[in-house]
Image 1 (cartoon, helix red, strand yellow):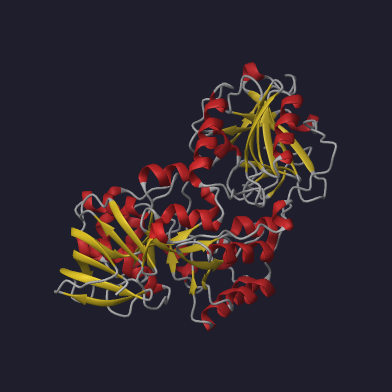
Image 2 (cartoon, rainbow, N blue to C red; image 1 turned 135 degrees about the vertical axis):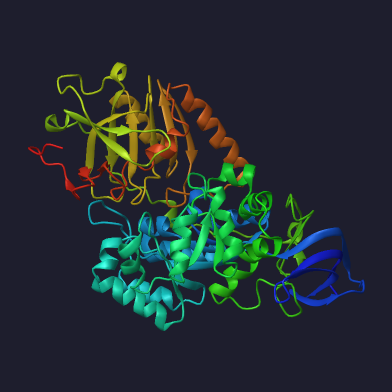
Length: 546
């Protein structure tokens, strides 16, 4: 034996009970599960801890952690997550199928088993300039990749319901290959929910309440309980795990690096479920077993001879403190990771035309502003005095600009209220979903300096105050970093500290800024092509009254 784990409790999902035993590993597989201790080249004393299969995140956007896939895997593996299903639509919007394939390859160099969902909505709409596009041809090609286990969340709900031909073909191609079709049905209920899922969609993660989950389960849909940075599942909803133990999985969707490091990954679900009194076997089933079974991933999700030796040793079934992580039969600390070399098209993805020109706010748009609420992606339409100066910090009226960064030269500007900056500017090349450069500031010079900080670093998050510019580099596609999680965490903390000094009261000003160009979330957003009225799904015309 290569490695033996003695005196551990393991879940037996077939008998639905915990079993005390000793486990032997050899050649990356579980070789023996016995009631007799065994010898091996290396021995770990389990001290009656809980040994489980690697945890699974059933739906995640890796890019939310601002890390390359190898670095992301390194981060979540320490928290016991050894399987993920990643929908990498952010990098696909930047660099299309080439960027997505690089992400898939890089993930293979890390410690986790990365499975993929083909992004189904790239770009999200035709109303903003992206760097990549995934059409039916690209989706078909990706579905044939063995690393792909599903079609990513179908966010175009109206298109699904009305039977959009491209969507219908995507779903059919996916099901022909016996792969899953991921859903995205926030707020849908009753007939609209039934119509959406009648199109062949099989799961949903956009729910937080018991009633929403119950309605979906009554339609025999699988559900993922989500615990991300912004979105959480209500405590009362956790009882659904005991009611439908075979239909529930866990996911994070979007979780920032700081939150992963401080609150855990899928371990957050386990601790929450244990605290709420969920049956331990059902809780572990949702975390370890149901995901691999649902996505048809062989030899995963169980502690049995012949299964993959991807395991997590916890101190107990209450606190879920990770004591050891075993990857392919080896302790995590002994697993080498070699990140892929970043190709030029990702390392030099910022193609902003120079010199940098900050556009003026059109006269016809000065009578209103995007209104920001802290902690919400929804924005309001605020009427303001059109005769005020273009930028009026005393009235919290700042300039928001979007600069297209793929070489086309589009630029747009409008007023925005709610950021509360008293000085300087902040900017980002991470701007959902197309990831053009977005900035907000108290005057054009500060905005220009912040944008230049991003260009110098080939992407990132920046602030400018006077002549001082501080940037967190995100040089891979302009949206993620290949730095170690520890270094990135420190630079992000310094960015937050400096940003607060500019006067903003927002909890995370850069995170809020990154959603101000997302033209599918109401009510008013700014793309590189102009101010967009999401409710009416059109640009704000010169003579239009909101």
